[in-house]
Image (cartoon, rainbow, N blue to C red; front, top):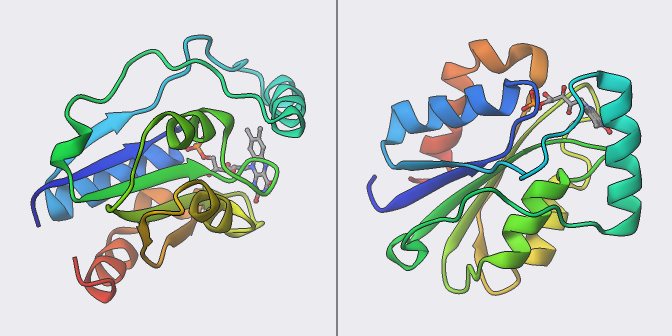
Amino acid sequence: MTNHLIVYYSWSGNTKKIAEEIQRLTGGDVFQIQPVKPYPKEYNQCTVQAKQEINAGYKPALKESVDNLAGYKTVFVGSPNWWSTIAPPVLTFLTEYDLTGKQVVPFCTHGGGGTARCFSDTAKLAVKSEILDGLSVSGSRAGTSKSEVENWIKKIGL
Ligand SMILES: Cc1cc2nc3c(=O)[nH]c(=O)nc-3n(C[C@H](O)[C@H](O)[C@H](O)COP(=O)(O)O)c2cc1C
């Protein structure tokens, strides 16, 4: 598979591992979403800030922008499950970029809460895209998810 972009945000590295696995299996380009102002390194502080931002619908500014998004037919979009939804930097990405006519493939990692609203909220922000079945991986298994990622890629036909 060529012509696709793998976009992700990762605070503690789990979602990054899935993004890297997708890249290894499929090739494609990777874009790591980074907020201008990083989230607190301390877990509790991060959860408090994240909760406030999510409740307010806050969209943090991003450090870098994607080049030539128009050239990609398929965009994987990965996020950790934060308070049952996508992390605010992923909200910014999905709001700033027009994914009309593209295939959007969501993936997430979580701490036990599963997908929750991560994929449905992604779909709401990419209404003019074809949303493919997503992959949800427990964060603790992110480093050993090769076959899971492989089966999913096959299943969705990419
Ligand atoms: C701010 C914050 C909120 C979180 N909220 C949830 C949650 O609602 N449900 C859940 O299952 N895990 C939750 N987690 C755990 C993360 O989803 C999980 O550790 C994930 O694998 C982290 O991905 P990352 O390493 O790419 O940042 C939360 C973690 C953080 C930091």
